[in-house]
Image (cartoon, rainbow, N blue to C red; front, top):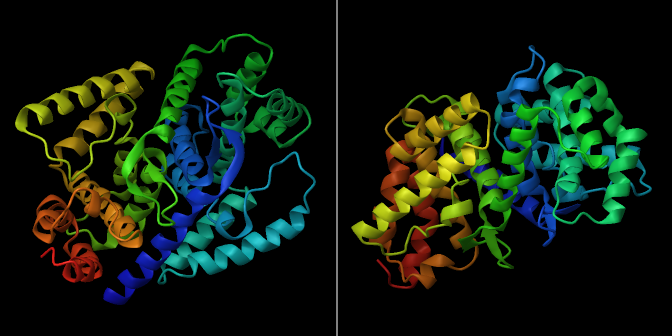
Length: 388
Protein backbone atom coordinates (compact mmCIF):
# COMPACT_ATOMS: atom_id res chain seq x y z
CA UNK A 1 0.00 0.00 0.00
CA UNK A 2 2.89 2.38 0.75
CA UNK A 3 4.25 1.85 -2.76
CA UNK A 4 0.84 2.73 -4.15
CA UNK A 5 0.77 5.94 -2.10
CA UNK A 6 4.18 6.95 -3.43
CA UNK A 7 2.96 6.49 -7.00
CA UNK A 8 -0.37 8.20 -6.33
CA UNK A 9 1.28 11.25 -4.79
CA UNK A 10 3.76 11.42 -7.66
CA UNK A 11 0.82 11.60 -10.06
CA UNK A 12 -1.02 14.18 -7.95
CA UNK A 13 2.11 16.30 -7.73
CA UNK A 14 2.70 16.09 -11.49
CA UNK A 15 -0.82 17.14 -12.47
CA UNK A 16 -0.50 20.25 -10.27
CA UNK A 17 1.35 21.72 -13.24
CA UNK A 18 -1.93 21.98 -15.18
CA UNK A 19 -2.66 25.27 -13.41
CA UNK A 20 0.29 26.81 -15.26
CA UNK A 21 -1.20 26.00 -18.69
CA UNK A 22 -2.96 29.10 -20.00
CA UNK A 23 -5.97 29.04 -22.30
CA UNK A 24 -7.31 31.59 -24.76
CA UNK A 25 -10.44 32.29 -22.70
CA UNK A 26 -10.61 35.19 -20.27
CA UNK A 27 -12.29 35.17 -16.88
CA UNK A 28 -15.72 36.77 -17.07
CA UNK A 29 -14.40 40.00 -15.56
CA UNK A 30 -11.68 40.14 -18.24
CA UNK A 31 -8.89 40.38 -15.65
CA UNK A 32 -6.75 37.55 -17.01
CA UNK A 33 -6.76 34.37 -19.06
CA UNK A 34 -8.17 31.18 -17.62
CA UNK A 35 -5.89 28.23 -16.85
CA UNK A 36 -6.66 24.62 -17.68
CA UNK A 37 -7.04 23.44 -14.07
CA UNK A 38 -9.73 25.97 -13.18
CA UNK A 39 -11.33 25.38 -16.59
CA UNK A 40 -11.60 21.67 -15.75
CA UNK A 41 -13.20 22.47 -12.38
CA UNK A 42 -15.68 24.79 -14.08
CA UNK A 43 -16.58 22.10 -16.59
CA UNK A 44 -17.34 19.61 -13.81
CA UNK A 45 -19.66 22.26 -12.36
CA UNK A 46 -21.24 22.68 -15.81
CA UNK A 47 -21.94 18.93 -15.80
CA UNK A 48 -23.63 19.14 -12.41
CA UNK A 49 -25.67 22.26 -13.24
CA UNK A 50 -26.80 21.10 -16.67
CA UNK A 51 -27.46 17.49 -15.63
CA UNK A 52 -31.24 17.83 -16.29
CA UNK A 53 -30.49 18.47 -19.97
CA UNK A 54 -28.41 15.31 -20.42
CA UNK A 55 -29.87 12.42 -22.43
CA UNK A 56 -31.35 9.65 -20.22
CA UNK A 57 -28.47 7.25 -20.88
CA UNK A 58 -25.83 9.70 -19.60
CA UNK A 59 -24.10 9.18 -16.24
CA UNK A 60 -23.29 12.65 -14.89
CA UNK A 61 -20.68 11.35 -12.39
CA UNK A 62 -18.76 9.75 -15.29
CA UNK A 63 -19.09 12.95 -17.33
CA UNK A 64 -17.63 14.90 -14.40
CA UNK A 65 -14.71 12.49 -14.16
CA UNK A 66 -13.98 12.78 -17.88
CA UNK A 67 -13.95 16.56 -17.62
CA UNK A 68 -11.66 16.53 -14.59
CA UNK A 69 -9.17 14.45 -16.60
CA UNK A 70 -9.53 15.58 -20.18
CA UNK A 71 -6.98 18.42 -20.24
CA UNK A 72 -4.26 16.84 -18.09
CA UNK A 73 -2.34 16.00 -21.27
CA UNK A 74 -1.85 19.75 -21.80
CA UNK A 75 0.90 19.58 -19.17
CA UNK A 76 3.04 18.16 -21.97
CA UNK A 77 1.43 19.50 -25.15
CA UNK A 78 -0.14 22.81 -24.10
CA UNK A 79 -3.51 24.26 -25.12
CA UNK A 80 -4.32 24.83 -28.79
CA UNK A 81 -6.88 27.56 -29.64
CA UNK A 82 -9.40 26.30 -32.18
CA UNK A 83 -9.07 29.35 -34.44
CA UNK A 84 -5.33 28.98 -35.08
CA UNK A 85 -3.80 26.82 -37.85
CA UNK A 86 -2.88 23.52 -36.18
CA UNK A 87 -1.78 20.06 -37.24
CA UNK A 88 -4.48 18.29 -35.24
CA UNK A 89 -3.19 14.80 -36.11
CA UNK A 90 0.20 15.73 -34.63
CA UNK A 91 -1.53 17.14 -31.54
CA UNK A 92 -3.53 13.92 -31.15
CA UNK A 93 -0.37 11.83 -31.33
CA UNK A 94 1.38 14.05 -28.78
CA UNK A 95 -1.62 13.85 -26.45
CA UNK A 96 -1.64 10.06 -26.68
CA UNK A 97 2.01 9.99 -25.61
CA UNK A 98 1.26 12.45 -22.81
CA UNK A 99 -1.62 10.45 -21.38
CA UNK A 100 0.50 7.28 -21.34
CA UNK A 101 3.27 9.08 -19.46
CA UNK A 102 1.11 10.98 -16.96
CA UNK A 103 -1.54 8.37 -16.14
CA UNK A 104 1.23 5.76 -16.24
CA UNK A 105 2.60 7.29 -13.04
CA UNK A 106 -0.29 5.67 -11.17
CA UNK A 107 -0.36 2.07 -9.97
CA UNK A 108 -2.52 -0.41 -11.83
CA UNK A 109 -5.47 -0.74 -12.08
CA UNK A 110 -5.87 3.04 -11.57
CA UNK A 111 -3.56 3.87 -14.47
CA UNK A 112 -5.54 1.67 -16.82
CA UNK A 113 -8.88 3.03 -15.59
CA UNK A 114 -7.91 6.68 -16.05
CA UNK A 115 -6.36 6.03 -19.46
CA UNK A 116 -9.58 4.33 -20.55
CA UNK A 117 -11.66 7.25 -19.26
CA UNK A 118 -9.49 9.78 -21.15
CA UNK A 119 -9.59 7.71 -24.35
CA UNK A 120 -13.37 7.33 -24.13
CA UNK A 121 -13.70 11.12 -23.92
CA UNK A 122 -11.41 11.63 -26.90
CA UNK A 123 -13.26 9.06 -29.03
CA UNK A 124 -16.61 10.75 -28.25
CA UNK A 125 -18.56 7.60 -29.17
CA UNK A 126 -20.34 6.86 -25.88
CA UNK A 127 -23.31 8.88 -24.62
CA UNK A 128 -21.25 10.06 -21.65
CA UNK A 129 -18.37 11.23 -23.81
CA UNK A 130 -20.61 13.03 -26.29
CA UNK A 131 -22.28 15.02 -23.53
CA UNK A 132 -18.90 15.75 -21.91
CA UNK A 133 -17.61 17.02 -25.26
CA UNK A 134 -20.72 19.18 -25.65
CA UNK A 135 -20.03 20.82 -22.28
CA UNK A 136 -16.38 21.32 -23.22
CA UNK A 137 -17.55 23.16 -26.33
CA UNK A 138 -20.14 25.18 -24.38
CA UNK A 139 -18.04 26.66 -21.64
CA UNK A 140 -15.69 28.76 -23.82
CA UNK A 141 -18.71 30.06 -25.74
CA UNK A 142 -20.63 31.16 -22.65
CA UNK A 143 -17.39 32.41 -21.09
CA UNK A 144 -17.32 34.94 -23.93
CA UNK A 145 -21.04 35.64 -24.31
CA UNK A 146 -21.55 36.22 -20.57
CA UNK A 147 -18.40 38.31 -20.11
CA UNK A 148 -18.51 41.86 -18.81
CA UNK A 149 -16.81 43.19 -21.93
CA UNK A 150 -15.96 40.40 -24.40
CA UNK A 151 -13.19 41.17 -26.92
CA UNK A 152 -14.47 41.53 -30.48
CA UNK A 153 -12.05 38.86 -31.67
CA UNK A 154 -13.43 36.40 -29.13
CA UNK A 155 -16.97 37.15 -30.29
CA UNK A 156 -15.86 36.47 -33.85
CA UNK A 157 -14.45 33.07 -32.82
CA UNK A 158 -17.71 32.20 -31.04
CA UNK A 159 -19.76 33.16 -34.08
CA UNK A 160 -17.58 31.07 -36.40
CA UNK A 161 -17.59 28.15 -33.96
CA UNK A 162 -21.39 28.11 -33.77
CA UNK A 163 -21.97 28.47 -37.50
CA UNK A 164 -19.22 26.41 -39.14
CA UNK A 165 -17.01 25.02 -36.35
CA UNK A 166 -17.11 22.14 -33.89
CA UNK A 167 -19.86 23.78 -31.82
CA UNK A 168 -22.34 23.01 -34.60
CA UNK A 169 -22.51 19.54 -33.01
CA UNK A 170 -24.40 21.18 -30.14
CA UNK A 171 -27.47 21.25 -32.38
CA UNK A 172 -27.80 17.51 -31.76
CA UNK A 173 -25.84 16.92 -28.54
CA UNK A 174 -27.10 19.88 -26.49
CA UNK A 175 -29.74 21.81 -28.48
CA UNK A 176 -30.81 23.92 -25.49
CA UNK A 177 -27.27 25.28 -25.15
CA UNK A 178 -27.03 25.91 -28.88
CA UNK A 179 -30.28 27.89 -28.84
CA UNK A 180 -29.21 29.88 -25.77
CA UNK A 181 -25.85 30.74 -27.33
CA UNK A 182 -27.51 32.02 -30.51
CA UNK A 183 -29.89 34.15 -28.44
CA UNK A 184 -27.03 35.72 -26.49
CA UNK A 185 -25.00 36.23 -29.65
CA UNK A 186 -27.92 38.15 -31.19
CA UNK A 187 -28.17 40.40 -28.13
CA UNK A 188 -31.32 38.77 -26.74
CA UNK A 189 -31.84 37.15 -23.34
CA UNK A 190 -32.00 33.38 -22.88
CA UNK A 191 -35.66 32.42 -23.27
CA UNK A 192 -35.49 29.15 -21.29
CA UNK A 193 -35.77 30.36 -17.65
CA UNK A 194 -34.25 27.21 -16.12
CA UNK A 195 -31.30 27.31 -18.53
CA UNK A 196 -30.85 31.02 -17.79
CA UNK A 197 -30.85 30.32 -14.04
CA UNK A 198 -28.20 27.62 -14.37
CA UNK A 199 -26.09 29.84 -16.60
CA UNK A 200 -26.34 32.66 -14.04
CA UNK A 201 -25.11 30.24 -11.35
CA UNK A 202 -22.19 29.11 -13.53
CA UNK A 203 -21.27 32.70 -14.36
CA UNK A 204 -21.30 33.61 -10.67
CA UNK A 205 -19.10 30.58 -9.94
CA UNK A 206 -16.46 32.02 -12.28
CA UNK A 207 -15.61 34.46 -9.49
CA UNK A 208 -14.09 31.59 -7.46
CA UNK A 209 -11.13 31.73 -9.86
CA UNK A 210 -10.21 35.08 -8.32
CA UNK A 211 -10.37 34.02 -4.66
CA UNK A 212 -6.78 33.62 -3.47
CA UNK A 213 -5.72 31.15 -0.80
CA UNK A 214 -2.82 31.17 1.68
CA UNK A 215 -0.90 28.46 -0.22
CA UNK A 216 1.32 29.18 -3.17
CA UNK A 217 1.37 26.87 -6.19
CA UNK A 218 4.26 24.39 -6.40
CA UNK A 219 6.31 26.59 -8.76
CA UNK A 220 6.12 29.31 -6.07
CA UNK A 221 5.22 31.92 -8.70
CA UNK A 222 1.85 32.99 -7.26
CA UNK A 223 -0.87 32.17 -4.76
CA UNK A 224 -3.32 29.39 -5.49
CA UNK A 225 -6.96 30.24 -6.21
CA UNK A 226 -9.94 28.35 -4.86
CA UNK A 227 -11.23 27.08 -8.21
CA UNK A 228 -7.99 25.33 -9.19
CA UNK A 229 -7.68 24.11 -5.59
CA UNK A 230 -11.13 22.52 -5.88
CA UNK A 231 -10.11 20.78 -9.11
CA UNK A 232 -6.92 19.43 -7.56
CA UNK A 233 -8.53 18.08 -4.39
CA UNK A 234 -11.24 16.40 -6.44
CA UNK A 235 -8.44 14.44 -8.14
CA UNK A 236 -6.90 13.76 -4.73
CA UNK A 237 -10.20 12.33 -3.51
CA UNK A 238 -10.67 10.19 -6.60
CA UNK A 239 -7.17 8.75 -6.48
CA UNK A 240 -6.87 8.35 -2.70
CA UNK A 241 -10.37 6.92 -2.11
CA UNK A 242 -9.00 3.37 -1.62
CA UNK A 243 -7.28 4.66 1.53
CA UNK A 244 -10.48 5.91 3.20
CA UNK A 245 -10.98 4.40 6.64
CA UNK A 246 -14.64 3.77 5.76
CA UNK A 247 -16.36 2.86 2.52
CA UNK A 248 -17.36 6.01 0.63
CA UNK A 249 -19.36 6.93 -2.44
CA UNK A 250 -16.67 8.60 -4.53
CA UNK A 251 -19.17 10.41 -6.73
CA UNK A 252 -20.76 12.09 -3.69
CA UNK A 253 -17.32 13.01 -2.32
CA UNK A 254 -16.41 14.60 -5.65
CA UNK A 255 -19.65 16.59 -5.66
CA UNK A 256 -18.95 17.87 -2.14
CA UNK A 257 -15.48 19.02 -3.13
CA UNK A 258 -16.77 20.53 -6.36
CA UNK A 259 -19.17 22.74 -4.39
CA UNK A 260 -17.52 23.22 -1.01
CA UNK A 261 -15.56 26.43 -1.63
CA UNK A 262 -18.16 28.34 -3.66
CA UNK A 263 -19.16 30.20 -0.50
CA UNK A 264 -15.74 31.88 -0.58
CA UNK A 265 -17.05 34.09 -3.39
CA UNK A 266 -18.86 36.03 -0.64
CA UNK A 267 -17.04 35.01 2.54
CA UNK A 268 -13.45 34.73 1.32
CA UNK A 269 -10.91 32.05 2.22
CA UNK A 270 -10.05 31.55 5.90
CA UNK A 271 -6.50 30.16 6.25
CA UNK A 272 -6.44 27.04 8.42
CA UNK A 273 -3.60 28.41 10.55
CA UNK A 274 -5.17 31.78 11.32
CA UNK A 275 -6.12 32.31 14.97
CA UNK A 276 -9.82 33.00 15.49
CA UNK A 277 -11.92 33.24 18.64
CA UNK A 278 -15.37 31.72 19.07
CA UNK A 279 -17.17 34.90 18.02
CA UNK A 280 -15.13 35.16 14.82
CA UNK A 281 -15.76 31.53 13.97
CA UNK A 282 -19.49 31.94 14.52
CA UNK A 283 -19.52 35.03 12.31
CA UNK A 284 -17.68 33.17 9.52
CA UNK A 285 -20.09 30.23 9.74
CA UNK A 286 -23.05 32.60 9.42
CA UNK A 287 -21.45 34.38 6.46
CA UNK A 288 -20.76 31.07 4.70
CA UNK A 289 -24.31 29.81 5.23
CA UNK A 290 -25.71 33.06 3.84
CA UNK A 291 -23.33 32.74 0.88
CA UNK A 292 -24.40 29.14 0.23
CA UNK A 293 -28.06 30.15 0.30
CA UNK A 294 -27.48 33.05 -2.09
CA UNK A 295 -25.22 31.27 -4.58
CA UNK A 296 -27.05 27.94 -4.74
CA UNK A 297 -30.28 29.93 -4.73
CA UNK A 298 -29.43 31.10 -8.25
CA UNK A 299 -30.29 27.57 -9.45
CA UNK A 300 -33.84 26.27 -9.98
CA UNK A 301 -35.41 25.40 -6.61
CA UNK A 302 -34.96 21.62 -6.56
CA UNK A 303 -31.34 21.78 -7.67
CA UNK A 304 -30.62 24.66 -5.27
CA UNK A 305 -31.96 22.64 -2.36
CA UNK A 306 -29.89 19.57 -3.31
CA UNK A 307 -26.66 21.56 -3.61
CA UNK A 308 -27.26 23.31 -0.29
CA UNK A 309 -27.97 19.95 1.35
CA UNK A 310 -24.72 18.37 0.17
CA UNK A 311 -22.73 21.50 1.13
CA UNK A 312 -24.21 21.34 4.64
CA UNK A 313 -23.36 17.64 4.87
CA UNK A 314 -19.75 18.47 3.99
CA UNK A 315 -19.63 21.23 6.62
CA UNK A 316 -21.12 18.99 9.34
CA UNK A 317 -18.56 16.22 8.58
CA UNK A 318 -20.63 13.50 10.21
CA UNK A 319 -21.18 11.09 7.29
CA UNK A 320 -18.44 8.80 5.94
CA UNK A 321 -18.44 10.71 2.64
CA UNK A 322 -18.07 14.09 4.34
CA UNK A 323 -15.41 12.89 6.77
CA UNK A 324 -13.28 11.64 3.88
CA UNK A 325 -13.93 14.79 1.84
CA UNK A 326 -12.85 16.97 4.77
CA UNK A 327 -9.74 14.82 5.21
CA UNK A 328 -8.72 15.21 1.59
CA UNK A 329 -9.36 18.96 1.68
CA UNK A 330 -6.51 19.20 4.21
CA UNK A 331 -3.97 17.10 2.28
CA UNK A 332 -3.15 19.22 -0.76
CA UNK A 333 -2.11 22.45 1.04
CA UNK A 334 0.46 20.45 3.02
CA UNK A 335 2.05 19.24 -0.19
CA UNK A 336 2.15 22.77 -1.62
CA UNK A 337 3.87 24.04 1.53
CA UNK A 338 6.49 21.31 1.26
CA UNK A 339 7.07 22.20 -2.41
CA UNK A 340 7.47 25.91 -1.64
CA UNK A 341 9.85 25.68 1.29
CA UNK A 342 7.22 25.99 4.02
CA UNK A 343 4.76 28.40 2.46
CA UNK A 344 2.03 29.38 4.91
CA UNK A 345 3.79 27.51 7.74
CA UNK A 346 6.46 30.20 7.68
CA UNK A 347 3.94 33.04 7.44
CA UNK A 348 1.89 31.76 10.39
CA UNK A 349 4.88 30.39 12.38
CA UNK A 350 3.35 26.91 12.54
CA UNK A 351 4.82 24.19 14.76
CA UNK A 352 4.44 20.46 14.23
CA UNK A 353 2.00 20.06 17.18
CA UNK A 354 -0.15 22.84 15.72
CA UNK A 355 -0.12 21.19 12.30
CA UNK A 356 -1.02 17.83 13.78
CA UNK A 357 -3.93 19.36 15.70
CA UNK A 358 -5.34 21.55 12.93
CA UNK A 359 -4.57 19.35 9.94
CA UNK A 360 -3.23 15.92 10.87
CA UNK A 361 -6.10 14.92 13.14
CA UNK A 362 -8.63 15.80 10.43
CA UNK A 363 -6.77 13.85 7.74
CA UNK A 364 -6.29 10.87 10.04
CA UNK A 365 -9.98 10.82 10.91
CA UNK A 366 -10.86 9.88 7.34
CA UNK A 367 -7.63 8.47 5.90
CA UNK A 368 -5.03 7.49 8.53
CA UNK A 369 -2.72 5.83 5.97
CA UNK A 370 -2.65 9.04 3.96
CA UNK A 371 -1.76 11.11 7.03
CA UNK A 372 1.03 8.69 7.99
CA UNK A 373 2.48 9.04 4.50
CA UNK A 374 2.12 12.84 4.41
CA UNK A 375 3.54 13.24 7.93
CA UNK A 376 6.67 11.36 6.90
CA UNK A 377 7.08 13.80 3.99
CA UNK A 378 6.71 16.95 6.11
CA UNK A 379 8.62 15.82 9.22
CA UNK A 380 12.10 16.73 7.86
CA UNK A 381 11.01 20.35 7.29
CA UNK A 382 9.88 20.80 10.90
CA UNK A 383 12.88 18.87 12.26
CA UNK A 384 15.42 20.99 10.40
CA UNK A 385 13.84 24.19 11.72
CA UNK A 386 13.35 22.98 15.29
CA UNK A 387 9.58 23.45 15.16
CA UNK A 388 8.75 20.17 16.88
